[in-house]
Length: 138
Image 1 (spheres, one colour):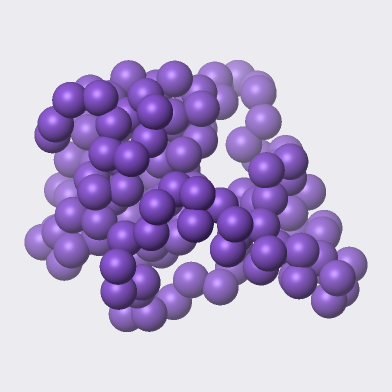
Image 2 (cartoon, helix red, strand yellow):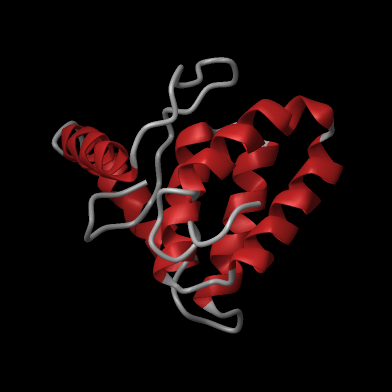
């Protein structure tokens, strides 16, 4: 994950250490930016990883929007709530259609099984607060 200007790498996610309440996008952005700045000031390896992560999600043979959808699916499969929120925000910024995000979440459900349902519930709740993805209801 990242501050508003850097890559999204966040290596602090652990299964079963979920947020108890789905945060607002604004609260999530502020907490992510603060945490990333603390990591950056703790050693050069963190910044190197952020750079690698940013390069992987940059424009290339695959459009950025597709890479964000892939990141969203991987994040659900890895049970990383913060990463799911980040990729939902990025999908919103890339103007990915709501229907495309919902299909990607369905793929994550098929791949991860019913254990992903609690995280998917929080993802939908978070999505509802985003400018583009929040239009309509799932």
